Length: 129
Ligand code: SF4
Ligand code: SF4
Image (cartoon, rainbow, N blue to C red; front, side):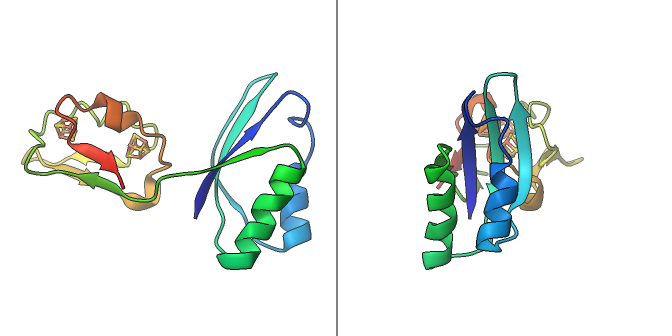
């Protein structure tokens, strides 16, 4: 399951993610990180479920980090898509590409759920469910 970890200026410099891995023994995978001097946001994949997942979330929340679940599935409505490519260049991870036949291709493994493509599409063909 993917989450956005939102740090503030108080906890930004603390090694909370490393401590979470050591304490919970869950191999949390960093997918994307944006850090400024005063705040930070890290997108992570937490490969566990149930009580173990709750333990990981609790650990971050107790450390003052806001945890937000990230939508899981990106869907492209091919009936609506007109192959304009407006979603391709704003995608920060090249998860979207246009084929020679002007069809959009999506690589789920590269997607970091930033939702930029949702806003970029002029006909609202992309959504997360
Ligand atoms: S949400 Fe869209 S723009 Fe963001 S990484 Fe995934 S495909 Fe690319
Ligand atoms: S921006 Fe929308 S219409 Fe254009 S290629 Fe992407 S999904 Fe299709």
